[in-house]
Image 1 (spheres, rainbow, N blue to C red):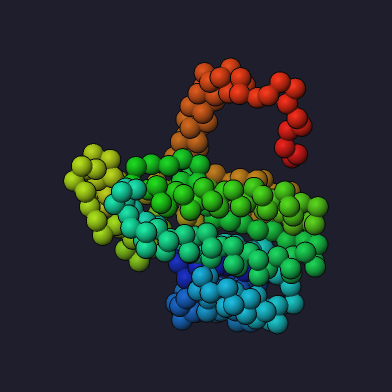
Image 2 (cartoon, one colour):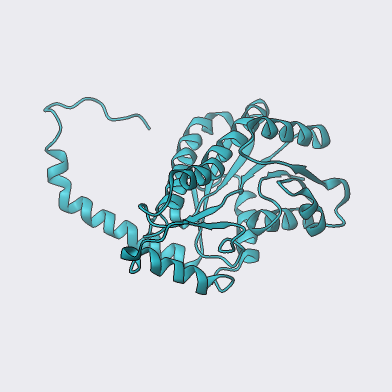
Length: 284
C-alpha cells in the first residue's frame, strides 16, 4: 500500500489523484485550504484518508502537515505538488502584486512543501515526487507569460532535484498536462489582470477569449490523465517528464523542432564565443 501526500486536493487533478489512489486501497494525506471540501468530495474511506488544512505558502504549516501524515501512517511514499493557480494577462498588464501572488503559490509553495518532505524521503532512502507542471512549463504564449514563468521554474527545480536526489533513492517527475477539463479556467483558479490594454487585443486579448470559450470544454479527460499518472508512478523507474494530452505532445514536438532548427542556424556563431582550449564542461 502506498501513502500519498497531495497538495491542492480539494479539486482538479489533486482531487482525482486522491480519489483513484483511495479507490485502489492506498492511503492519502489530502491537503487543502478547505478540508471540509475534501471530506465532502471523498466520503467513505475511513482512516485511509487524512484531510489536513494547508496553505502551501505557509512553510510552518507545511511541516505540521507532514508531521500529521507521519503520525497517522508512519511513512509517506509519494508527494504530489499539485496546488497552483493561474494568471492571465500580458507582461505589461500584470502588476507586481499579481505576479508575486502566483509565484508564491506555484513556486515558493511547492518549494516549501518539498523541503518539508525531503528529510523524510532521505531518511527512508525512498520516495517519489510528482511536480504538477504544465505544457506551459515548456512552451509560453502571449498572455500567459507570468503563469508560464512559474511553470518554467517548476521544470528547473524538478530537473535539479532529480539529479540531487538520484543517489538517495528518491525520484522526481515533472507532470506536464495540456488543456484538461478541470476548473483551472474558473475564476476560483484563474486570476485575470485587472489592467487591460487595448493594444494587446490581438495577442493577450485572444487568450482571454480562448479562456472564455474553452472553460470546461477542453479536450483532456482528467480521469484518464490520472489513470496514467498512477500507472507511471507505480513504475520502478520514473521518467523525468510526463507530457499529457494531444495538444501537449504536438506543441512540444513543434517547439523542439523550432529550437533544434534555430540552434543549427546559430551553431557556428555560438561556438565562436569560446576561448581557445576551453575548460571542462559542466558536470552532469
